[in-house]
Amino acid sequence: MQKAIVTGGAGFIGSNLVDRLVNDGFHVIVIDNESAECNEEFYYNDKAEYYKYDVEDYDSIEPLFKGVDYVFHLAAESRIQPTLDRPVKACMTNIIGTCNILEASRRNGIKRVMYSSTSSAYGLKNSIPLIETMHRDCLNPYSVTKVAAEDLCKMYHTLYGLETVIFRYFNVFGERQPLKGQYAPVVGLFLEMKKAGKPMTVVGDGKQTRDYTYVGDVVEANILAMQTTNKDAIAEVYNVGTGTHHSVLDLVDIIDGEHSFLPSRDGEARHTLADIGKIMLDLDWKPKETIKNWIINYRKKHNI
Image 1: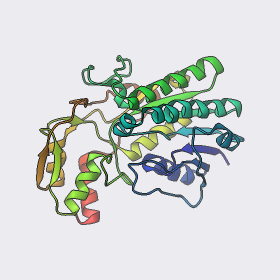
Image 2 (image 1 turned 45 degrees about the vertical axis):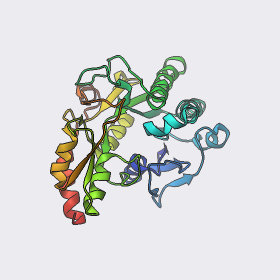
Image 3 (image 1 turned 120 degrees about the horizontal axis):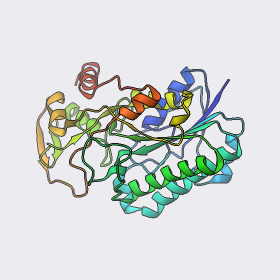
Image 4 (image 1 turned 90 degrees about the vertical axis):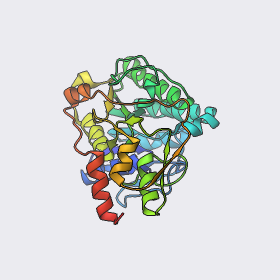
């Protein structure tokens, strides 16, 4: 039986990935300190092993890597606002933590590490669609630290031969997404507001657009990166999006509820849209779910 480690495997994206790996017959080890502020709850698979360790603690996590085949590194300070409040913590978790994962992988002969980064790397100056070769425009501790970790992944391949694949996710939604709190993504917040009979609160004019990407498609990208025999994919960066985008007001229309407006926030991109040609070519990946279809089915299932 093959073994995989998933860091951050009790959270939104990570727990979906754990379920897929278990279903595919893997022995899965989860490292998660269960500290994510955006998560209302954490999710566990009875067939996986869980260790409540911090990725900053190398001595605790390193023994878990013995005999492991693949590593999926999702653990992070994963929202912009908390990193603005605690930039040192962001550096420790996202940079030192990633270096610890890579070093433990190198020393234990891990076959490949899949690293989860962010489309926030593109910042405000790049025009859409956003292409992996564009200049990185990091505006906050979150994007700076995530991009620094991308460079560590590339360096560990160049210097030590450790195989890595890097993903930049675009606005992930789907099952187990956070539904409450100031750091929750807009899709979950809007659905909860609709369910509670409250107006959806739109920041700014609502015409800003995002490339909303289904969590199941994100999981599939990770699986394909693990499985690929295409050596051109190693140490490469891949956008994980849909190649389409929707405005916040589009979401309001799909969810079909009352809404109100809040002042706009500084430092946020007006539009995001992934160019996904590279991942389609190198990993034979393509998105299968749309935000509109998912919301319609979610509303039917939950009578919203």
